[in-house]
Length: 158
Image (cartoon, rainbow, N blue to C red; front, side, top):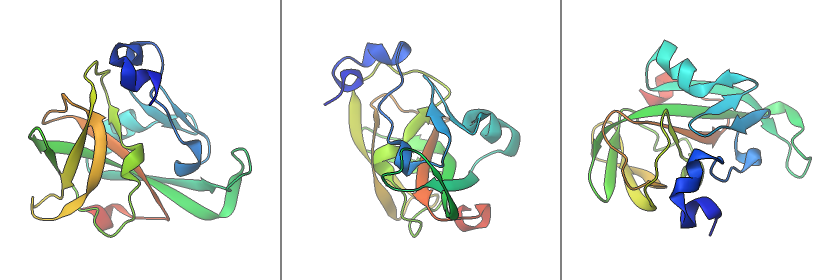
């Protein structure tokens, strides 16, 4: 249990916990975004639309954040199309990518709602891509960033 999980209002002053080894090397959380090597993922999604992907070098395990020369990590940014109290439908298909849903982050706004588990449905609303823990007030139009190991293209998620 983290401070931001116990007191969600703290999200307005400190970023939610972040596993730097799950994200591309050089990733840093902010209050309402993630930067990858100083590039805002939220701004990148504004420019490219969603779903979109951003790939960078993976972090070598147990290295303290050293970038790998051969392994990659991809961040997928997707938009919530529909939200119910227990499920989200997103505008992407992420079933086969090995997405690390435990690292899902809400982009573009700071939520003061308590975290809730959500089943994540793909763009067609048929297949459960995984389960994410996100603020309980996630609504249509919100953007979610989530990392997945490997190098993936936008064609794989559309």
